[in-house]
Image 1 (tube, rainbow, N blue to C red):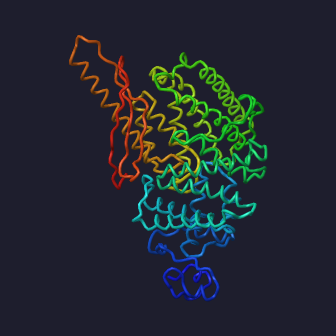
Image 2: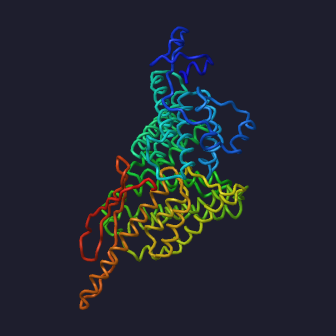
Image 3: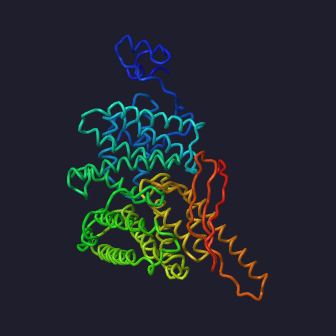
Length: 515
């Protein structure tokens, strides 16, 4: 095979272990040998006709020191980027990541690492994100990730003014890389490191709404990290970024409506930053104390946020009628997603201080039905894009996974919950921090546990006909965690019965290779 330097120089390598003598005698720095080589496309899964035809048309050269790296970059360009941007267009990839991949080896290695994992996902049907070091593509991806870290480490004392942007770009790519392997803790650590850079820059520039400077591409990079920050609250990781200072209502201007999808999305992002900090304050309160009568300050805050959130919807609807004319199916998909996410967070805000009262969630049944409708519309829209059978397996934005899980969790109607679970199972994919396979497993454990508790409660009531039948036992404080060795998950919850303290329980669920 030869060392990477000799292959790049197109000379024969003597393959001396450690470092080849050809490089040493010629004064070159031997960059070592590939630990893992991928099979030629003809021996495995071929690149699609679409990927082959796209490269010449774009007129790009392929960076990388080996054929595997160049092929990985080509796959990233033709397959991974369309997946990542399947919900919303972004200048981040074409305007920043791709040019930087040619100029910065650290970024190129990180891109190739993600590409290898993505191709593995495509080949295996987007299984539950887990690390498998027996898998050749995953080993190659891990090697590329290590090379990216090594290059960054070599430059840590550099005074290059562009280094911070390189590090921030790599942070985002590393977050995606670790999420694709099911490693949430290191992913959130990379996210925190990237957000720390954003916070430092925003403080130095005095621009709290556009950390990283005024450049539009830098803003898109910061926005991508900020959206991941919003999601991290559901994975015990955040949020890190603070909302804009000053009065909440005054800090987000939605009174003038939205002329474009981008404007509507930016306004929702800014609003959600406040929403998520409110939810964080609520979630530290014990479940039994999450009642408006017990938390007057939080209740006042909830009412203000809910009022402003409702104003946002009014502006969105009026803009949709007069200003937001979707240019294509993708823009319509984006508008549908904004409506879907609005409903999702509205439910979280509206019920945040309602405890576990079932009546509260029954009132929201029409909204749960609307969430199903919009989720199906978004999922089906990919099949109507002129690419039969194409649905992304990896997206960087939140889409329909979290909303569908919320339906499975909170909706009281059995049929509606079953439909939501069916939709989750029908499209195996990842949306940033959300893994559909993991949430399907989570939802199944939740529904099975509630069904078992209801059966147990019914049996208990029937044994003593003189007693008033008990209300069905419910579960609260639910969660599920993947073990460090990724061989099983632990589903934990507290069962709540009328007149009794909630009991903490957990269930270990083994995983097999098909999960």
